[in-house]
Image (cartoon, rainbow, N blue to C red; front, top):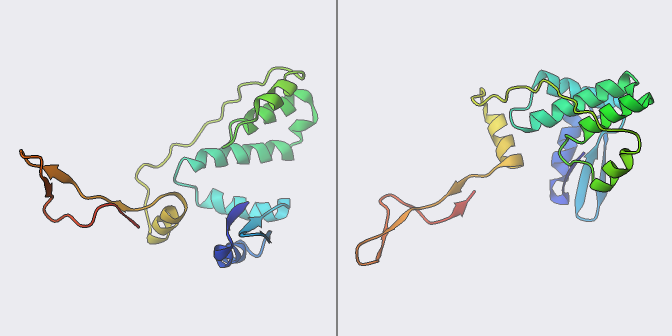
Length: 169
């Protein structure tokens, strides 16, 4: 699910079209969300991320997510050990399970420490203009700060060639 301010509704529609009109868009108050709920629709998105892997730490979450879906497809969750294995993987995603949920699950047994071979994040990816703009829009920003110095009298000296302080783009 992707949730954005309602002013970015057109962006969500563009994403939906990009993924072959899969999923649905709902609006609530000042927010709009793009959701994919069916396995058929999800397969389109999975195919995309398998072909074009994420280049940031979010790739780790995708690997866990993909493994969870694979295990569910193989019906591993239909027995207690498989369910605990899935729960262990879910607990490694962005938002770990709450203490109360983990406490209740302890009645079934100890969560196994499932280890996956995690991909090496490409520290020097081939960056194209679309990746850069998407990264900045979704995960980062450009910031420009000037350096100021003080002379021996405590007076502030503007650094040569410095612009306005603290401009955030």
